[in-house]
Image (cartoon, rainbow, N blue to C red; front, side):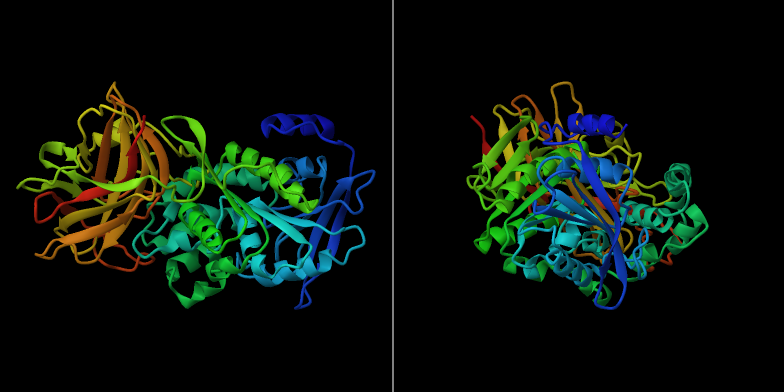
Length: 543
């Protein structure tokens, strides 16, 4: 059965044949921490010749067996590594209390100090894993022992979780879902409970006050969810989670894998740029993926066996450009020397009357209006989602754009292919009947049949949207790489929400944790010479 699983995972991850399928596992190794706690780890290695092989370190809060072992650990142990997979503090038998993300620097460094002293470890260690596992790498990477030769973090970043908590755009779906997951993950039949909980979790999104959503879904509180509600990203409470200041000091080679629809992509690209600007050895690979995607696993495993294993043996990996991007629309992988790639110039596309979009400045015109009702919030459709059982990534936006609380602006038919690769932003001149309002902007591709497909998006909040002066909403959209084909059209959507990707703006200014009143707002979007609303695209015409 184990070997059948090995064959299935090989096909699923598109891996080369293994060197061996005969492995041995030493379970429940006790790794001492500086405060006296002991964390449990399992060592996977080939039955023959395992001692001295490069060691992959995986630090994980989700357990060390089952699918974790089959998909994450075994493939590497069969192909030239031994693997130490460790349960983080307070999870699955490890000592101490589970305080998500807050102990990973000290515990990670203590683990590495212990690991390099083990007689079987050898002279090379590679850090590996995605999401939380990637953050555990960023937390220690500037201070690792000399034996660490490379790190391969995927769908992750050095200031993990802070992207969720921006004051102007709180990520409800991700924080509630993950908080409930880790609170229940060690219960008997945890996966079954999680699947049964999904319907209650979807109802809990609508709970008021929001700080009762966790108990509405499970009957128990989630400390993580309560913390993210109580403390914004700039709170001193989260300072221990922000390792972005350490990135420039990382000297080990880094290969980072991300997705265009991953919630951590902006921070991941920031970290890569920091490394590249500091002259470090770094790769960036971004595919057409969301956070939970088989493509991420395939790309990360490939980097472990090329980039990681090469550096572990004191060699150089196969030559490739520092940046490899999947260009959506063209549906091809392309290589570039840097991020953002050279040759793409920012160009403003202005909103126009009658739903137009053009590089020309707008004429005198009246604003467009719509009504936003947080009791019937504008839904999130595809895009950046991090939840089990919901569709993420590219999807048909026809039904969304038919809603009365969504306005759209569209170019004429393109007469040549246009590539947009880099950072996307928008300036939207906006007014509301309430001071507190959100502005959601989405870039879309409209094909020859009129189907609108999302490319990237972003949301920001305003606290003075009802002033006579009209507010300018500066919206940072997700980075992207997209080719708009000839005969297609470029579209911009504007609305006041994407629920439950972001929490509802109640319009009252009450704290998001305790708000209980929902107020409907009348919104206006301006496009005239004094208020030139626009989206800025880094583009070049493709030939």
